[in-house]
Amino acid sequence: MTKPHWLFFILIGGLIYLFEQSLAHQTPNRPVIGPISESRIQGLKDEWRILHPDMPTPEQLSELIRSELENDMLFDFGVSAGLIEDDPVIKMRLTRNMLFLGITDNNSDEELIEKAISLDLHLNDEIIKRRVVQLAGQLLLRRNPPTLLTDTDIAEAFVQRYSGIKHQTHYSLYQVYLSPDRASDAPQLLERARSQGMNPVMALTTSSASLLPSELVSVTLDQIRAQLGNLFVSGLKNTDLLEQQWLGPINSHYGVHLVWITEVNLGADIQFEDVQSELEYDLRMAARADALDRGYAELRKDYEIRLQ
Image 1 (cartoon, one colour):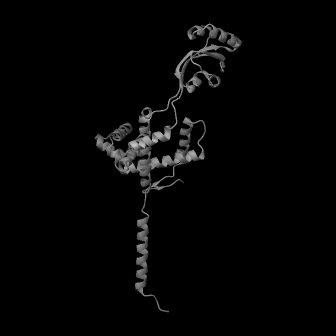
Image 2 (cartoon, rainbow, N blue to C red; image 1 turned 45 degrees about the horizontal axis):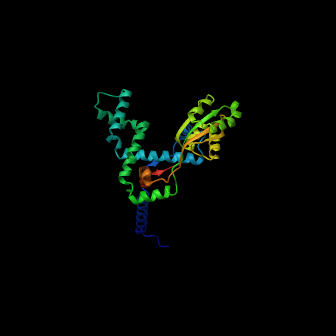
Image 3 (cartoon, one colour; image 1 turned 120 degrees about the vertical axis):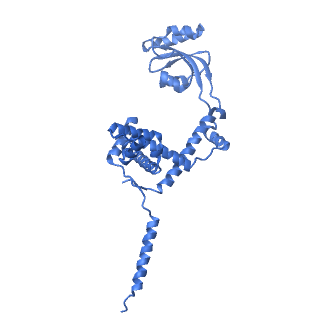
């Protein structure tokens, strides 16, 4: 059998080398972010419980972890971009930390900052981390600016959000409160108030003592509910709300009420001018969030994110 010529081995070796170089070029060595430790995950759960009655669901916890990894990526990106050295707030924080640790050696502030960074003090300071993440987000927005709003965008958003929607109806009223032990007196008192044309201020002298408001001015049903309860609002909604007349008796969890409706201001169609500033703000925030998402997507290409 003919032995392979030595040139054959050189050719094969060269091809293998080129393949490895090509592979290395296609999959560069990227910084690794994650996975986060079990203690950090427990910390996320503890923070969640401060604001919520229950533990986060698996989906909610997954979102918390994703956000934490995203912040870690932004922090690494911000440090690499030199944001620590350029920000006066961070520099002041690093100087304070060095003075607190007693590591001064009669150095200047710039020397202290340089030494603090060499000691990785910025890596374990949550205030610095939050600041870097904030600055990194601003840097991403400069690189991926939000889409500019147009008058057409705002007009279309108004139609989508408020077409056919009215302002809430507002009510002004007096309520005469009768405690549960006086509930049987309500029909007779109501008849007397109507027949004598009793004005609300006079009728209020017959109220039982309570901390309930006797007069509500230009309030919505939700605001009435907050003051007098859902049972009262249900009874009010089931009554013909005639202005300048006595209504009732209306039950509540507190007792019985006679009601004088001073005014009912029916909700009018929402006008563009009423909500223009709110719409513009919401659309700017949405455009900003979309721009950040694009920036995050580009940045993730430079990192290896590990969930586990």
